[in-house]
Amino acid sequence: MTARVWTAAILIIGDEILSGRTQDRNLATLARGTNAAGIRLREVRVVPDLMDAIGRALNDLRVAHDYVFTTGGIGPTHDDITVDAVAAALGVAVISHPRAEAILNAYYGDRITAARLRMARVPEGAELIENARTGAPGIRIDNIYMLAGVPSIMQTMLDALEGKLEGGKPMLSHAVGAWTHESAVADTLRETEKAWDGLAVGSYPFWREGRAGANFVLRHEDAAVLAQAVADLRARLIAMGVETQDGEL
Image 1 (cartoon, rainbow, N blue to C red):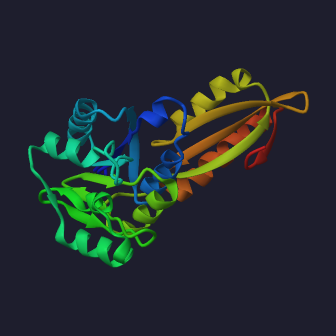
Image 2: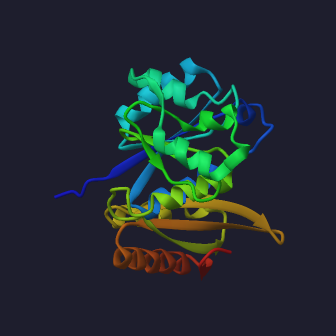
């Protein structure tokens, strides 16, 4: 019986990402976090700060995956429209969450402003995701998790979700470094992958010290199978006269 595979997508929202002004740093963090929870990241999209674009992408992703994580657009300014776009896509109203208001008032005290209180707005029926760093919470509704775009704050929100996301087995990985052109061992990589059910092998070439090399990353859910597959690949490469090492070069 095949175990269920839980999947996720990330919707990165922001004109600044598409313009190149800001480099996204949340993708790698979310990929590691979802994998640790046994959730396979299957798709990533980047959309501008436009209601229609956010809504179209969100509706595609939320029916195709178990989880959708959005990053960006939940701050205090006029161009932070993720809450409005998600509410519109789901056909619900936007409300001010009483507990979010209380959190923001407690955090800012006499520095609270109307702009800061915008961060209490959520789609009706949503729950809050704790944010111990700056108070302003993330938001969950159905299978959609709205996280901050600022990497340090996004990480804090992701940490708050630890143990709360249902998933399967994490995908384990192990690297084999080899001094060879990847094209010279392409058939060997393919044969190794086929030899072990559920194994995935990725090849990542480089040129260093005047030599061609590659790191071959093997991935599998089962640690014992992964260890055997790694040993198998190294044995195949060594038999071809390829210099290898356990781990990346």
